[in-house]
Image 1 (cartoon, rainbow, N blue to C red):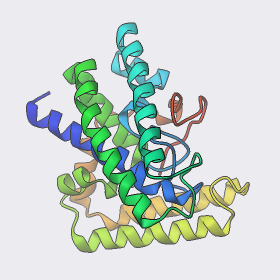
Image 2 (cartoon, rainbow, N blue to C red; image 1 turned 60 degrees about the horizontal axis):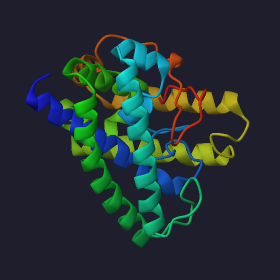
Image 3 (cartoon, rainbow, N blue to C red; image 1 turned 45 degrees about the vertical axis):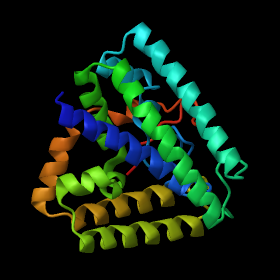
Image 4 (tube, one colour; image 1 turned 180 degrees about the vertical axis):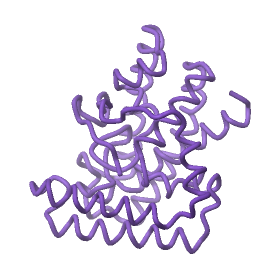
Length: 241
């Protein structure tokens, strides 16, 4: 992978993991999860690399697996320290997180993210980095449309970004009306999720959809992904669209 591609990957790590810290305030809403993965939102590459199916697809060796597990543990500890320094308690960050706490969380996580991007690069081969990036996009689905790297690559306009934000906000409100993503009405939740995915996809032009398809690369069965390790529980498998 070229030097430019690596920097795009580093930006992806920053953007996707930062998304987790920004959404921590939402508690159990769709779109929130721990710093490395969880039940909703967009996962970090480190989270997906905890899944055996992704490791197999990318060709992770036993030595790399051990290094990645160590990185996830380090990341979790650093993330926990940032949260503690920001005065945030509880697994989800809580629904009552203040603007000041959120700012401290974001600033702290940005520094942690910047420190870990080169560590991931050092652990994986260029072609492995590229494939993980593609799988992240596939797993995220329409959630990736809010990532700055994707916005730039697809030339998503300000107007389109506003429409995406509106669809997402409406979806979150409807999910909350159901009692949250874990509220028990799984059939209704799945229906809303599918409607949201369709609505978000319609925001893009055919050309943008084609570009996104190229970003995702060869199809991967994301239903086999199990988010485990720090920030997630083994066996928690979900395509986030």
